Length: 115
Length: 113
Image (cartoon, rainbow over all chains, first blue to last red):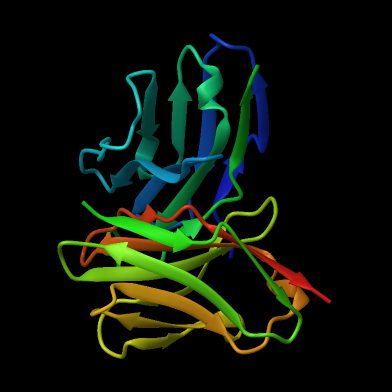
């Protein structure tokens, strides 16, 4: 079946602009996660959604970052007023449930470059 | 708080040699432990995981890892490296029952002919 898809695969934006990154999880997966992968910082958790529950936003680095998940499926990560330190690969993952025993399936990522 | 330390940002081996990638964790509760592999321009793929039970876990592509509680380690091994194993490997930990993963900084495995 189809895996996790993300769009765009690459995004170049100017400092100060807003960007939206999209994630389509695997059908039937109720849990969805966003991670950021940057040089020197490794992989960092940003936010996760579980069904209709309030999302866990504890990993968002600033209030310029926000995310939503519509209809329990597609998710959009929005970064407002982008800064050069936001340059990274943003990875989305989904799993059948929030339980750790269920594997998280990762998408290929969106590479964001802020100039 | 949990943390993961991967010793060595780069490890080089010859084809056919033993692969050993080191991972140590810190967790205040019984951990779930994972190894992921990332090929260039791809997402992460789960190699293997430890949740409960047998401490030696086998994964895909001939990899295995052993959970050693006394050493707080979860090292990844493969008896004989193949060129196709060249990739970046990430160790991760989560609380039992919870889903947020805390990753190490990754180890790039280089395999030479």
